[in-house]
Amino acid sequence: MAETKLPHIPSGSPEQGRIVQPRSLTQALGTNFGGVQMSTVSSILRNAERGDLEKLSDLIEHMVASDAHVRSLYGTRLNAVAGSEWEIEPGRAKSGEEDVAEVAAEFIREELELHPDVNRMFSDLLHAVAVGASVLEHRWFRDGGRWRTEPAWTHPRDIRYNRDWQVEMRTYLEGTRAKWIKTSEHPNKFIIHNPRPFNAAPTKTGELLSCIWLWLFKRWNERFRNVYSERHALPLHVGILPENARGNVRENLQEGLEALSFDHIAVFESGTDIKVIEPSGDAGASLNDIINHINGEMSKAYLGSGLNVEVTVGGGNRALGESQFDTTMLPRLLADARRLANTLERDLFKPLLMFNTHLFGGRMPPIPRMVFRLIKDETKEIPVGMATLAVGAGVVKIDELRVATGLDPLGDAAGGNEFVAPMNPAGGLPDEQPDAALSDTPPGGADCCSPLATGHPTVANGRTSSASRPTPLELAFAGRLGTSET
Image 1 (cartoon, rainbow, N blue to C red):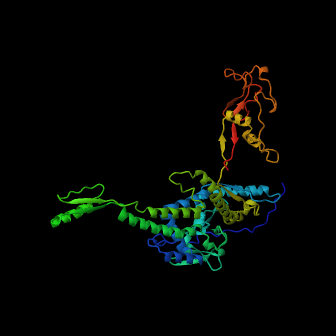
Image 2: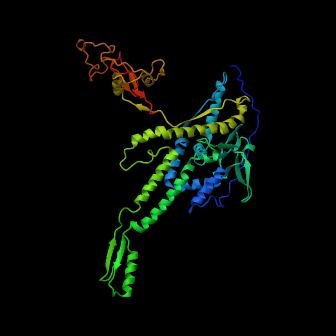
Image 3: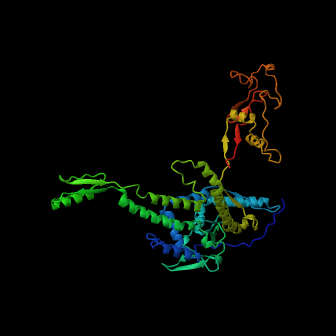
């Protein structure tokens, strides 16, 4: 084979050791948002627009950790990509580079499989979908004659954009003393994921930014509902005493009413009247409607559709939810997966290959492509009899039949998308009508007592065998039709 000529990359060693030293766990991390107000949120968003993501990262972290609905939305979108199957495909190769491109793809595939928690790495990077940016720091080390890396997570609050729109990282040197470093001064040291799902400054593109005000209003309404329920949701017990009641009777009545609950009883003196005033209406019903509306708006903002996570009491939204998934949620998930793949190809695959060019003859091979399989093709088991009926009814396509028998599909241009012409029970062409009285064999071949007498095929372990010439009524294949759920 002719020698493969690839662009030459100077050999070198990656920068080792940790640059970003996180803040100690004994120090306070984040901000307390127990009494967050509109002025606080406005200040956080204003600072984020200027490149300071510290408070914004803390607020989003608090939202995801404390709000069940936000947590569900965050996990739904992140896990759909981070938990999906993935493949490494050879990069686009020039003539004569096909072999080395395949070897490079296998090298990257092995590196990802050796990673102690590759799905965790995907999740850390996909946090950028919510907040706007995520950064991992390479931890390069030598292993068996090649360079490897296990990227380390860095807290999003230690990320900021400088006035030149360059990413900077904060490291804590001694105690609480912090220093900001430019990632551009440390090439091949960081994996920087900034998805930018719409055309705007990267500091404004975090998807959960559109939910912050909704979350704040929901928080207020939940507080109002709790106060209203405490005051009006429970029945009110009123004690009535005669005018000449002794002082200790009044005190005993008050203590008894205060201690009265669903599992307690109270005993009062004769002449004491107890009335129970039931609340009118459903306490907090209007506030619940507001909270549910806000949850629906957050679902649409972050997922694109609320029908897939919000189902009414009567149900009935399944078909519409599936339709909305295909047109709203799925495109977002596919875009998240493609953007993550681009980041990994640029900041992980390329440095790995560049520092290991000695494994590829000192040359830089084509960078492999990463593909996340969010939708999988499934093969359904179909009994042979059902497959026979399907072919006989003319509802099976040629390529489906070829795939079922283990053959390669022909493709649309060669007629693979056409339906198989059904055969009549006697084996003639579709337009023939043979006289059944001329045959001694009943339709379908021999009777059940001697299935092999006329070569009727048998199926065992998914394979068809025949003692002699098979009749055309049964299909001589494994009874498996490939169907795609996509």
